[in-house]
Length: 237
Length: 237
DNA sequence: CGCCATATTGAAACTAGTCAACCGGAGTGG
DNA sequence: CCACTCCGGTTGACTAGTTTCAATATGGCG
Image (cartoon, rainbow over the protein chains, first blue to last red):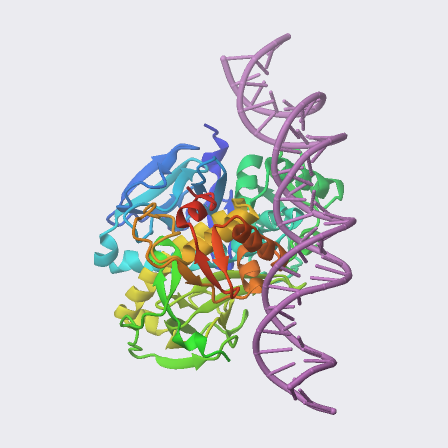
């Protein structure tokens, strides 16, 4: 259990298919559990397993959550990385299609699935967020299907830059005040998210560092020396 | 323009993350354009481009639609393959995050995006379908990130078998009456969907044929000799 | 201090991509 | 009618990029 993770506040920017970590406080009004119950999970705790009865829907109030699927031989793919405001557990089937794990210390609001039909406010919020997450997933499918390892890692880092990295990226901005990003994921998690091996991810990070595009001491806290150059390496621009 | 395509009736089985082609008539009650306008598109027609103003939402009434994204250098990823009942154009941003193209002759219902907020019936239908499409996308992310070329192609063919191939696949059933499936996509489209090259897809099909798992004369109409064996090649079971 | 987990680096193996030739059916025009 | 072209698909040879396997480094924590 790592105190760092409770400080971190996932602030979502899914509307342009990225998410970001923020340290500058401000819970962003996510503390409205309505009629749902609030649960807390520790770092790495399993919130929901693939195949579990899908009787609840979840909304992230604080922290980060990963959704993933496993193949019988153990291969894992992290499908979505969720931040504050994101939702999961919306499979229309009787069982969940994915597993969910706490990426950090996390608080989630849990609602009975039936309340989707009875609570219009909740449903609208879930629907709106689902649409945003869908776009993020579209973008990620492009990454998984068509980008090189270098491009994947560059894209991954860019998505962590507030307001950047999404599909609708506004282009280079003068005021890149904070170019330091917190990865909040291990190399293994990044690899499973990007459809690569841990070694390939590590090599890509090392190559980016060697070329001077990024710098880091701790491997999970990256200083982006040139947002512009990194952006060009994503393959998207 | 190919008459074959109008006969084909995409009947969606997205609830378990597959879709299927049906020839046995029955529009399945999809002919209810409510307050929307119905448009028809020819085979290969562009319905919506990436970056277009996202002022409408679409519902497939008949035929098939592909959603795709392009990288600046021309790489293409087909993100979703949509059938009857599926929806698109739901990006919460001002512009569409994906392009949509008619895979067959297709009829779609087009609604003003604002009617999502005013028409509860429409919104519920869109929401329900979006949740199903989300699961399909989850499954596809697993395919793109973690499956081998052989597994991707096997999975692709399995998804075309009615009631099979989805994540919640019920396992081998005795009554595999119809094991003939219509691909309805060119090798290039399959490649762009599966994150492979046309040559790799072609080789995978040839290998499956050589091994006796499938057979075909026309390359877009495949007879599955052993659903069981094919299923085992998907990597999912 | 030393252990353990995570990360990095190197070398070899392998999968899928690239480039190029060829096939076969559909449509065209002499 | 048949040669010709076009287009999509197949196949082969070679290449490149990623994975695999293995060794080495680093950092947190008992």
